[in-house]
Image 1: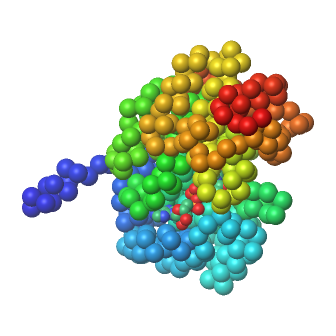
Image 2: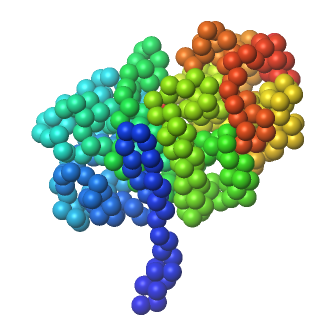
Image 3: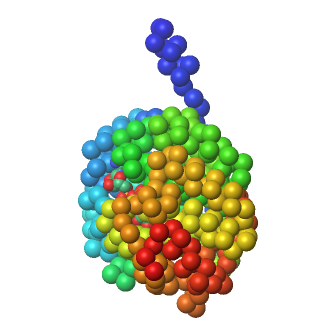
Length: 384
Ligand code: NAD
Ligand code: MG
């Protein structure tokens, strides 16, 4: 019984966040060991005790049996579809394969599609759910930190085409999101760090108190402290849910979802320079981009330099690349700027950035002078 007592005292209740949108509302449940309880958690929210789980090969090997067991415990009948891991699977061919397999499994309008995996599986399975039979109930069970704090909340689904990333898709909100912190134990440390960058971003955009929390607890999140992870996920999701609730379909040009691109103009340029799948993770590009966005803001006289240095210091303290000099390459300032101009979020060819007046006070700006960006990048060690 002493082990039972121990287990009980270790047990922490799951956190629950309610996401309210104009079109619908749903819960994000965050905690340890949720896969085993998935049947009980999901049954009240789904029209039928039947689901097809979409996952990738890596996650299938690690976490699919626990989920299928958890669903079977409350009498769900399930089948699964497994795709190859990696961004290369997020395309129309794999999408067609998944849809075919859903139809072969004879899904009905009430059968749920459950995405078990990172953002790739979530985006692809979500798009299949949005379109198969004109829309099936959808559940997100994100297993990367990035997907737990970012892609699983907000309802964007889709695939890449040869014209670019995420160019075909749909808004399709989940019935529920289960963020099981236990799944993070198997995640490679670099992937954990990349997800953490999007957490820090949330604080920097609009929640200075959360950024201060990150300075204190970020190292715990990275080290695998599940309580710290659950709290970080809850706060980051709450922030994103609030932004999304205000701008569900990304129609506001200046505030709303556009603010979520803090650090991303620089980040995307770095990703483009490495080539996608070329050794720099999206979150690592964002990590460097956060510091650059704050230093640019300071250079333009908008934000205290001390805030910019606080950002860089915290990012570096969690083991993420925090400055261009920490990446294993040298960059040309003009080439990076050329990438920024090609970014699909650049309107009218203007250099469009999310800047800040301080920590937690981000805003969008579409008239950043070319020279200011050039000077910054040179001072950061780029070749002219
Ligand atoms: P991912 O889905 O490729 O996962 C990263 C890697 O980790 C993969 O190899 C995967 O197999 C593996 N993995 C996943 N969970 C694991 C676990 N628990 N243990 C061990 N390995 C695990 O990548 P990601 O970073 O989660 O998501 C990136 C995608 O998300 C991109 O395609 C991006 O466009 C998309 N995204 C979408 C939104 C949105 O709003 N829909 C937002 C941000 C990003
Ligand atoms: Mg991002």
